[in-house]
Amino acid sequence: MPPSNILPLINENTANEFRMEDYDLDPVTGFLPSTPPLERLPGTFYEPWEQLIDNFHDLILTGRFRSSVDKMPVLDTSCLATPAEYRRAFLVLSFLAHGYVWGSSEKISDRLPACVAIPWVKISDHLGVAPIQNHAAVVLWNWRLIFKDEPFSLNNLSTLFTFTNSLDESWFYLVTTAIEGCGGRALSSIITAINAVNVGDNNQLLRALKEIGSIIKEIIEILQRMFDKCDPYVFYWKVRPFLAGWENEDQLPLGLIYEGADNNDEFGNPIYRKYAGGSAGQSALIQALDIALNIEHHPTKFEQNSGNECTSSRINGCSFSNNALKCPLNKHVKSQLPYLHKIRQNMPGPHRRFLEDLTKVANIRNYITSKVNYGSIRAVSLLDKIEDVNNLVQAYNDCLIQMKNFRSKHLQIVSAYIVIQENRKSSHVKSILPLNEDFGANTEEIQSATKKSTTSIKMLRSIKGTGGTNLIPFLKQMRDETVAQEIMDPIE
Ligand code: HEM
Figure 1 (tube, protein in one colour):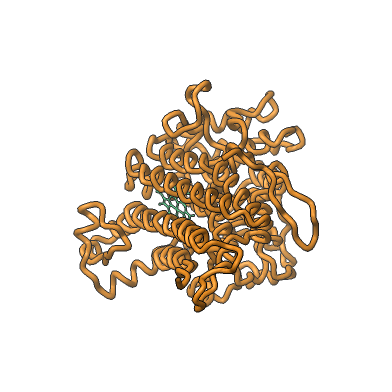
Figure 2: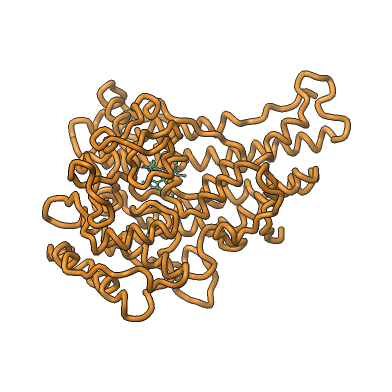
């Protein structure tokens, strides 16, 4: 199927077509930049940042990272020229910031010095993204081709930077980068499918749905490769702590002070910002597939019951309106958005806008259900052949099954990389970790933990995701909401 880069966006505001490049998307590379990311900022002006990155691991190892950052000058961001330079600058500063907060043998810092905070906030504003480590920095903008003349594929990718200088961390990012590499084909097929619906072309819709299904299958195969070279122990104990944010974070209950970026509050106290840390849950690709297939996600019970008022608003008062994405300080009463919507503030602005606009035109499921006339002897409208409609129903449902399989595989990964590691923290609960088919018992260690108990169920419920989500119930809900969209077979 040739790449299609025109999104058939017709909504109440505009009848214009939007082009993929308007959303910083590429028909071949999808959400990845169309050319490999910059490996270093050009010229000498930003050398103080780049040199800290050069020496990052040695400075962390010797406990001299924080004092070295403190000596850095505040650099003006106006020398950044191209989108690629802004992305590189964001990547560099987010590694410096998280290294500063989490990477020292001293106690965790609840302040970020002005030399990092001020440019990081400005660059984040420019990119339309929250100033916190995110999926874009570690996955979308953090790779190079080992052999420039060979194609993009997992066996030709290397990371530009990692916190721990470990192969495991590189692999964790690269597997995800390789998944994003399926984005161009996925987006083209989604657009083709929506175009087909708009002109009523069932054959083209069928082909596009089959292509979407096979792309999700490919994504699952790549996801499975996480186990090859990323050791769960290294991930959980060495890598994950660096990716943590400062929202719902026990070690930084108030959040983080971005020195020089914010004024003090009316009482002269510094303002704390709260943001969820980096997670592949911020992948716009997976959300685009959900939206295209009309898979709807709702706030979890935890989110509904959590009061939705952020700590900083309780402490500092709040003058912001009820819009989580517009309040720069997270200083507001949060709206009841599901987690997957909230974390869009951690996606680059154009990608977030793409998801919003895609939502307005995603019509595949409605189109197919409108052809299925339940309860009548004739299953379909007079214009469509029963066989065609059945094929569409089946192809659509196959896509849902693949999305469900993706989420089941992901649950297995989360159980191995987080639940079991968390369980190691307290050996007395290790032998009573509950297990069922949801954890896809694929290791002896997982299988040995099959006995159920109230204590361990409570523990599982309390394990938190990057954004403070109650992990396992949250992920299961995502999977259940996927299956819930199945279209029932028409009655023949
Ligand atoms: C070691 C590997 C991985 C671990 C430990 C892991 C962990 C997690 C965790 C803890 C969450 C809960 C939400 C959050 O904390 O942000 C999550 C959500 C999510 N992750 Fe992963 N993840 C891994 C790999 C991946 C990969 C490679 C992808 C592919 C893009 C991915 C896609 C997602 C998605 C889409 C969600 C949102 C929930 C959903 O849509 O079902 N994850 N992940």
